[in-house]
Every structure is written in structure tokens, then in C-alpha cells.
Image 1: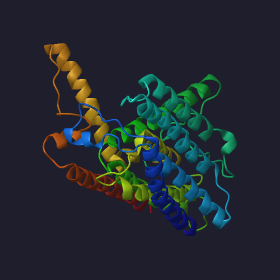
Image 2 (image 1 turned 90 degrees about the vertical axis):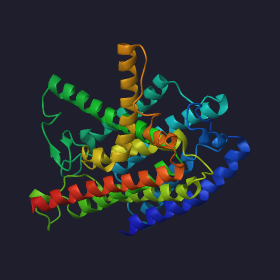
Image 3 (image 1 turned 45 degrees about the horizontal axis):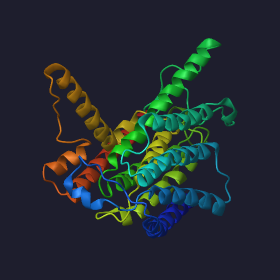
Length: 372
């Protein structure tokens, strides 16, 4: 528990001070955000606001986590290194995207295929290492399981076959990890459209994963007081709790400056990094399908874009004129077009994020109670 508190506190303080430093330096360098022309007109005044603030978030997380491990004299686990790799690797992809936006004055940043290549390299690299037998602990548990999971693992073992079946199963498992990591990183990227929306909602979801990881650590398999039927086969839940606290703390520190009216934007550097590591938490804590509930806000944002795009293409093909379900997507901009103030949309979406997390934690705990 000491390491968890230290990690969160150090990351929060470092983010609070580091983001302020980033605002000053990025303003001097002219790292200003371009604004989409078809977005709400109220956002045009934000043009030129410093972006790439995700750099401060990512550095704060890394400093907070490793400082806590150093102060408690405990070495980081393989699980921790995998999650840090996801965080930093996807932040690098986002940084390149932000850099292009700033210096080429192109709001769309990287071409879609270029961004996907970067995301794929990070996601597949993470997945391949996470399931490698060499990372199994003394109980034979690898960081990632070769089964699907909701709260516990279920279904067939993807790596349970021999020869060709083993390799085909491994390839399919990597595809699932790729979908989760790229999908979640794109979902958080879409959510990052209002001042403070992604920072606060991410802090809430990662706080939930900190709680889940603490519980899994207390109820992990191998502890004398824990029954076999109720224990969790997770490799390093304590390190995930420590890292989750660092991410929540860093997001809260960043929120101090990102709250409306934002002094700095997170940019793709932060949004892609947070989404990818969130998927990593779900994979390594064996709660892959539970992420759909815990991250319900991100799911809602993503589906609003999918529905809008699909309906426009279908109606254009059938009638010759494309029609829209929402005035604009993602859905948070739709409510702005309806006349809601940006801060009202943000706060109400925070409430939605909190309700989704409450539902997810309730389901997680109810499942454990049912096994007693």
C-alpha cells in the first residue's frame, strides 16, 4: 500500500509542476494546436493553445512508478515493464502525430495508415512478449493469458494445440490484443475533444483498475488464506496497482491545467498512450470484456463515430445523399451543437464515466461474492 500511495502522490506532484513547465516551454516554441474547421465554432478561440501535454503525463507516470519502486526497495516486474512499454511506445506514435500537426499546420496529423503501422508495431510487440513462456513466474503464469476473460479466464486455450495449431492460435491471440490496444487507444483519442474530458475520465477508470489490482493481489492464487476457487491467476497485480495509481495521479495533476478553459491540450501523445495502457491493464488483469463496462464512456464515443460514418455511407448509397444521425461526431460535439455549454457536456460525461466505473466495480465484486 505504501508504494501505491507514493506512486500516485509523486506522479500527481510531478504532473502538476511538469505540466506548468510544459505550458511555458511549448508556448515559447509555438507548439500550438490546430482546430478542426467543421467543429463547434466555440472551439476556434482555442487555436494556438499549447499541445503535446501528454509528454508531461507520460513522464510523470514513469517517474512516479519507478520512484515508488526505488523508495520501497522492490524491483519492477515483467508486467510493469510491459505496461510502461505500451505507454511510452504509443506516446511516441502520438508525439510524431502531434509534431506533424504543429509544424505542418495540418490538424489531421499522421496519415491513417502511418499511424496504424505505429500502433500495430507497439501492440503486436507487447502481445508477443506478454504471452511468451519465458516470462512465466514460478506458478507458470505469464503476464497475459492465452484465453479470453471477463473477470476470470474462460473458453479454449489459444496456445493449447501443437505444431501449426499452436502458431495459428498464437496469431489469433495477437490479433485480439491488436484490436484491443489500437481500438482503445483510438477511443481515448476520440474522447479527447473537450477541456478536461479525457484527463478526468481516465483518472476515474485507472483508479478503478487500481482498486481491482489491489483486490486481485489480496486474493491472488498461492496465498495461504485464499481458496483455490476464489483466487485470481494474475501474475503481478501489485505492480499494476502501483502503476494505475501513478496514471490516475498524473491525469489529475494534468487536469489542473487542462480544465476549462484549458491552458494546454493532451494531444495524441497523451490520448493514444492512455488508451493503449488501459487496454494493457485489461489484458494483464484478465478483465478484457469488463473493460467495455469500465470504459463505457470511451465505447459510447467510438460507437457514435462508427454509427455516424456507417449511416452516412449507407444513405448516400441508397438515396444519393448522405444523412447523419448526429449533428457531428464524436457525440460530445453533438451536444455542443445542441446548445450545451462545453463545461456542462464535460461534467455530465464525467458522471457517465463514473457510473460506468461503478457498474464495472459492482459486477467485479459481485462475481467474487458469488464464488464464496
